[in-house]
Length: 223
View 1 (cartoon, rainbow, N blue to C red):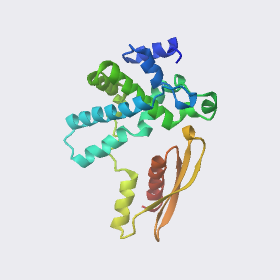
View 2: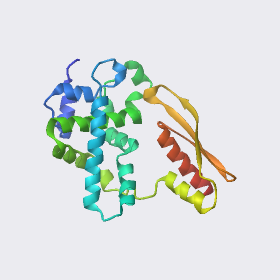
View 3: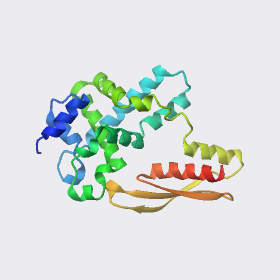
């Protein structure tokens, strides 16, 4: 595996990451499209759990809300979309290592790739410096999100489910009507339908996000 380049090392240092084993951080920034043996997948798996625990602990300490409300905020704050937004804000796309074809297909700005790399970096921080250091890094990088109202509003799918029940309608039905693009830059079109009411569609980079946006569009139109 090639060495971590100087620009990436300086960028990580500037952000406050603890870089000792450069091969670890190189893996965290490497997408599978490069064909290299060590990519970010294992670190992303770890970082996802570290992020979830750090945010859950913060929410528990900062709020007296019931479990349902805490879970609602947690899901929003650790979502793929939020991880990708944080990654864009700190410039992950400039340093992620992907194939030329994947970059040409928009992979360096894909929610899926940026979100995964962001979690992989958190996983690397945990391995290098432990949970407390990773948690501190998360509090810094996620500060804007934590101080916002992210997740305080009901998830669009939950809101639609409750709306349908309250109006004595059958539960909403979701259907993927189109999937296009390569895996690293996929696009999903989802249709949601409520019997005898209507339907709405939305497009996003993941099935879950497309379902959420379709539910939001339905509620704006019929709710």
